Amino acid sequence: MPESIETDSLLTGEQSVLHESNLKVYQVYCQFLKDVPRIDVYIDGERYTDNPTLLFMRLWDSQRQNKCKAMRLVRCFTQSELVPWFIQGRNKWVKTETDHIIDGGRESIYMSTANQTVQIQKPFKILDFMNNDDGDVKFIVDFVILFDIQNETHSHSWTRPILMDQGDMKQAEWLYIEGASGPDWTL
Image 1 (cartoon, rainbow, N blue to C red):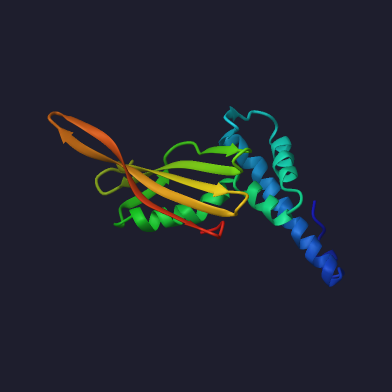
Image 2: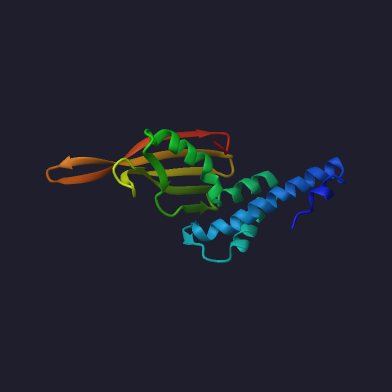
């Protein structure tokens, strides 16, 4: 457990910075332990089913020479990583007071150690509560973000199915909506 707030005030400047840094690592670690069992994790094509603590140690150790990069890599494996993107999705897809964006299924994470990349995929549903208390699904949006660990860049995309009439059938077709990349690992 981290030291108490009273003890923090007794630390010197350098000790305080180190303590604050360790506290952040501890907080991310606690979130990591909660989230990894809720996420489908694949490393080099293999489904990861072992203990979350072992995965944390493996990820942290892979970037041990750069603590900031290690922290950033570990954060990719928490659901809190999607919060700014969820807000972006809400701002993009929720157009009326009766529209809502909700979870559309399990998050999947694919890590390639050879390519030094982490890809996060998460579906969201856009519901309309105008005529139904349970909400009518307007459409599903699939969010994908790809982090380049080595270069500390990312790209992301939002896609959604477009229903096209073909006689009596409706066919879903994925349409690329948006993508961006940049030197910053955050939104």
